Image (cartoon, rainbow over all chains, first blue to last red; front, side, top):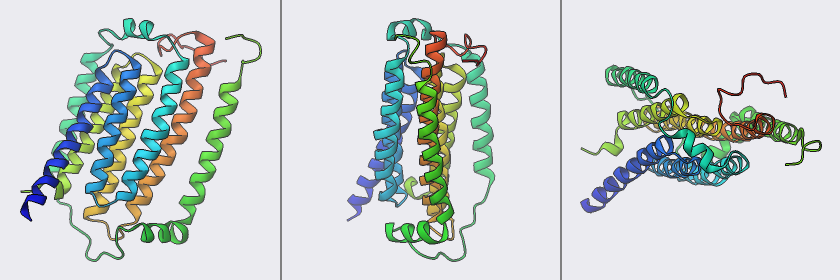
Amino acid sequence: MIVYKYIAEALFYAFMLLTFMGGFMAIRSKMLMHAVLGLAVSLFGVAGLYFFLGSPFLATMQILIYVGAICIMIVMGVMLGSTPDQLAAKNFGGRNIVLALITCSTGFVALFVAIGQTKFAPAAERVGDMSIRFVGENLLFKYCLAFELISVVLLTAIIGAIILARDGREDKAL
Amino acid sequence: MMISANLNTYLIISAILLVIGLYGMVQHRSLIGILISSEFILNGAALNFMAFNRFIAPNPAVGQIYTLFIMGIAAAEAAIAVSVIIAVYRKYRSEDPEQVQDMKL
């Protein structure tokens, strides 16, 4: 039976690697389409980490919403924008790499020290479990406001996106 | 020792996701690249919420609801950002943030 634990641990390493590899692909690639592909790979790895955190529901939602919807929307944006070779020529070398490296290493070291030095105490008692049923009951009764609020935010975003992207379509032939 | 059952592992993974997003935001040369990097930052935050939810939260549904909320906000943000980028591209014929100086469309 112990072998299952090792298989699970190896899968954890694989998902972690997937997350980081996707991230590096997204920030270091010259083509925007490759960057979106890296984002999708990385989000898939994070979905696997959610599975390890005990929530298969959120892992599914991550794949559905992030990989399925947001990445496709960004791909649309990429295809409606500049041509790939224009952008590839510009992205060659990048901009502000020294500045970016300084920012990131400082931030990471600060966070690493903070994580290492803090003692997180678990809660004294836990009520409920990680099941979808419990999440649904909480979402519809106790945290009903968040549920209603996110639907209003999404509706506003849809209307705003339509208004913003429709502007100037009549007078200019594209 | 199993690192998949340790809170600090997840916190460091989400710190690395945040740092990847920051790097991309500073370094990328196009608005879409900056949008992609912001998705990494949001994902780092969501993973943090889920890690605390799994290991120390008293009510294990709250972190999942937070993460779902972050996903919804990210979807709305991506929709608005993509449409703004399309409008900016129509006006300026460019996706370089340095060439977009005034926002009057």
